[in-house]
Length: 374
Image 1: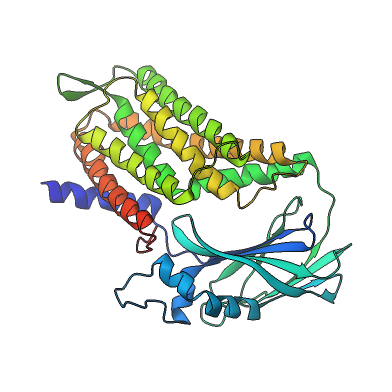
Image 2 (image 1 turned 45 degrees about the vertical axis):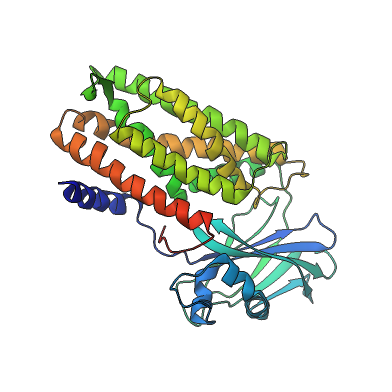
């Protein structure tokens, strides 16, 4: 019977949050720095088609192995990207190389200095990395503090000219609001945690069993408390982390997020926290806020005059994206709460699947591995 629960719930989960291997890379300019800077965020799995990365032949690419091939990968990347400032070619100088996680994929981050005059009118970018081996690859090119949307480069478009534009607080706010919405929708661990909080919200736990709540109003109030607790908490730590008042190691945060999912999933199966679920949402929301900040650190310019607009826009975007998920799910949760299907396959079966996924995420993130497809 347990196997039946797991298979059924796994099908539901895959349908809802299926994620193919990312084929998205990012080129981000910082024109405020001297010399001018550019960051290249490159999804690491693509290099397996070019370099033998699995040194110990165990079928898993670790961060240690990625760092071991740093010079080879850097050479390949730099040979496939070129920059010009006002039509004058820029010399590329590597400042730093690191491996990190972005939407549950390992990424390489190369920070470069561009040795050329700062542009007055335009920046030219030519990018051809991976296009010859995968026609679906994309690169998103943008200038920090610019109101224009990112330009997408692909096998069909390998060159672009970025025209410099005046920016405003409103444009910065709107750009980061959109970033926040997309981040929560692509943040499968945040979504899974939210689902583990929402699923039992239609029930009251008493006498060692779950009982449906009396009315839609009761369900709505319970979900509102849980979502508010989560939102307030992650807003606090997002602001503290991005402002560099409190900074935690990103790997520790990622592991802690996985463990928060594990705890809430187990709590759905064998309730430990049976009252005031919003307090649990608040406590774990503090950790998730640091996870949001890990992504925002790659996008935001702390010393920019638009810093507060960026921060507020991103946080509001996260809330909008989160509420969209809640509003879509709420009617279904309420309509199904009194059914045997809900308790057996959604509350119990889906929570078992979530617990398994959380354990795998925690293991993967603890040891810097990359074997999960999402």
